[in-house]
Length: 473
Image 1 (cartoon, rainbow, N blue to C red):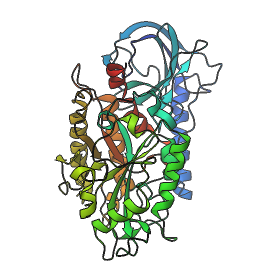
Image 2 (tube, rainbow, N blue to C red):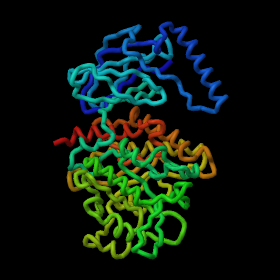
Image 3 (cartoon, rainbow, N blue to C red):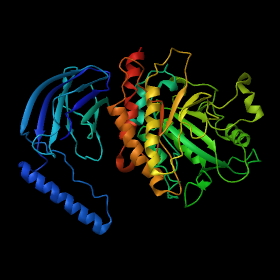
Image 4 (cartoon, rainbow, N blue to C red):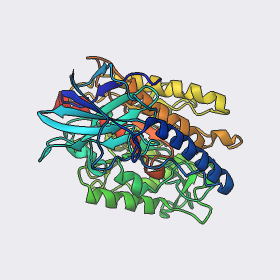
């Protein structure tokens, strides 16, 4: 039997659970019939999948019709303070394992409801339905079926979620979703492709950190601006070269349309051939990042207000002698992430503190990776961000790894385990009481947005609620 429901209030408001209603799945009232039909449905689905190879035939929608009537109704009174969790005596199911539980909550004297597990059990997040006219809140719930936990977040419009954050916060204080090898959404070798959707779609759905690897063309010619997108020694597409300028222009177009946002862009030199960091740095400074109206390249952590509408350079390369002398000898290139220890579980360098354990050589190492990821999330969450002028380190947490020779450790397979584990930690376990701002830093992911699954992005964005409440002016 599933454990009783736990509610986690990760919003900046107090909420009260006021009503629990129970429903049979759509179209079925008899629990015995439901059980038999569910079994039949699973058998038919498995048969069709095996016969056709179409393993994507998931369970049908469990969305209740508008006129659905509950078979049970229970008034409750369960108040939860902001950023508090409460175990209840409410079971998620009653007559059948396929039951749907509808919870109604009250926030600021207005009511909102949510059904769990939800219309599409594969994905845990859904928007609460407001029950009063002119609702003053938008809420999102993430349901964790394994622990019967409902995490409640303040909804964010993912295309412009930074709009609600105050200008004075340093970027190091924010919880920021990022992607690893961000433009690798094209047809490519399975160990090279890391993303399910395009950079534009990532931006529209809340991603604000891009990890980009480039190979300079004609490296000894500083007047040549060619930078090819690569992953290691491989091109990111089997259908022809993809260039950094196109990615940059697409990113700037998004920022022009969403001036409240910023994009932190990590750039690292990779690819075959003879080239060096100084050559890359000169090309970037001369042909790309020299426009101070579009890029932030001062050698420090900016505030959100300084970064809005701009690309913030996250420098994973060394500088030429000339660039090192800029800004009164402090250098050039935005956030300094020039070096961190290979395969690190926790490393401080420059402006960053990084977890990038990447030697997941076999599936047995995935549990180690999950451990290091959640430990770094806990470190970031326990930090209370300081006053203006002291920006601290930018926490960076890579959820990614790949092994070319092990299909079970290709990026999509790693993500299938790491991403749910991170959601489970943030939505179900991350808590520090009155300590820390519960932030995540930059969380760098693979294969987000696959089949519309943005749950991990929503969970990361939602963790900004506590610092927003504490620092609002």
